[in-house]
Image 1 (cartoon, rainbow, N blue to C red):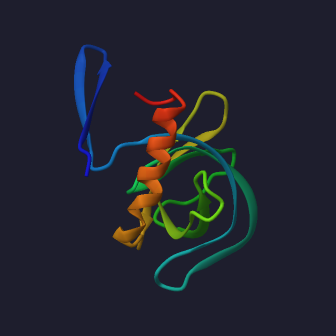
Image 2 (image 1 turned 135 degrees about the horizontal axis):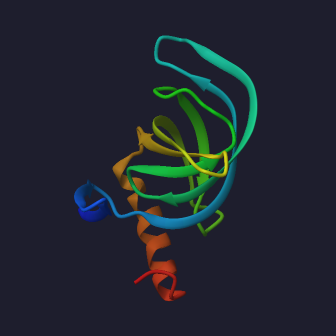
Length: 135
């Protein structure tokens, strides 16, 4: 398990961000077709592409031009490297930031991922290191 501290310098203020898992760069394109909440509330017919920018054992970051509500969930199949290493998971939208170009950066949590599947992230991290894409 990784604990990464990221220091952000903004107007002479230091904020510390503690992450439970190490973020790995990734380029994936997924599509959100529907969102749901635990109280059976559903939003369907979305068909919005998203561009995943980073991933960790705990979540993903992605950019989209669509404005999704927070605290909703969507189903995803994430493939990192090996075609057989597919991760079927539920993703919860927990944070968003509006960017200058009109797009939106989202922070999401992976929900219900079995710990036994952590090998998928470990293999992907090893591959990035071997390719010189990660220190």
